[in-house]
Structure formats: structure tokens, C-alpha cells
Image 1 (tube, rainbow, N blue to C red):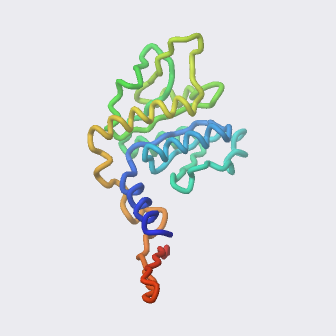
Image 2 (cartoon, rainbow, N blue to C red):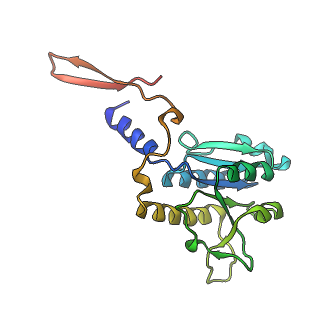
Image 3 (cartoon, helix red, strand yellow):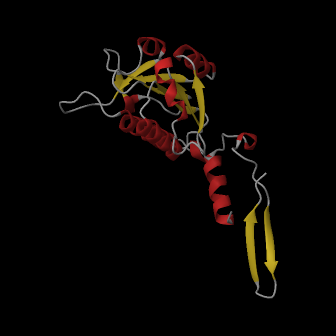
Length: 205
């Protein structure tokens, strides 16, 4: 690994947001799961949570694209997922059109936040909606009433990134080095004096 890539990886890990996450409830189409995880990586999310009911569990092996950089926690049911998220002091938001729903841009995403997205066709379950702290909506001016789940996730997550950037939250390291995906080794230089060239590689333990 080149020194430049080593520094790039360090910079990415140092900006990871451990108190911002996504929970996918029965979102099972591979291209949607992959696209959401890719956006999570792009905005600096360290871990995503997933809930798959029994009929969807065959999707557990789905390649998640950016999974080598974004950690995943699977839950057997929405109650377990909510218990873990709320146990971490997170406000849980769910995309759901209700009488109490607020514009997704009116939420304070600098607070510890988990954003829940439901199954592609039916949305979040009644159990998930009942346990969420806030219903959020993306304003729609056309005939359709919803967006593709991966598009909705991108919109909400980039609003969260915008607010956190303004607040300077990407300037403070949240993820402890002991939780990095691998230990960053030392750069070893092998010098070829006659050619006056220094070749560097990274040793990863």
C-alpha cells in the first residue's frame, strides 16, 4: 500500500460518525441495500443496522458494495434493533407520512441519530413506526408519494452531513483506533541507494 493510500484511509476513519447510523428494515433488494451502504460510506457512517424477517433472510449474503468500509449489525427483529439504538441514546427517525411527520430538513442531525427506512413496497412496519421518536417526510410536489429507498436515504443523509459539517463534527475523531477495521502498521522504507529511490509499503497486521 502506498503512503498516499495509507493517509487516505486514516483520514476516512478519523472522520467516521459513530453516533449517526441507518437501520434498514426488510429492505431486501440487493441494488437498494448496496446503494444505501455506499451513501453511508460517503457521508462517514461507521455502522449500519439491518432487520430481516424470516422470509427475507436469504438476502443476508447479499454483497453490500462498500461493506469493507462500513460495518453491519444484523438484528432478528425490530424490537432488538430499536433497543440497541435507543440504548446508545439515539433519536430514531422513520420515513413515514403521518399527521405528525415533519420535513426531514427540520430535524437536528447533530444529535445522536438513527434513520430507519422500511421495506421497498410497504415501508416501515407498524412496530417500527410506533417505537420511532419522529416521523419524517421528504416533500413531494408531483403525483408520486414516495421515492426509491436508496434515493430517500441519500437525501436525508446528506442533510445530516451538511448540518454536521457546519457544526464541525467531522473535525473531531469519534472512532477509536482500536475499532478501526485493521491495525495501521508502520511504513517500511526499502531504499535503493544506488538508484536514489525509496519504495514504501504498508504492513497491515
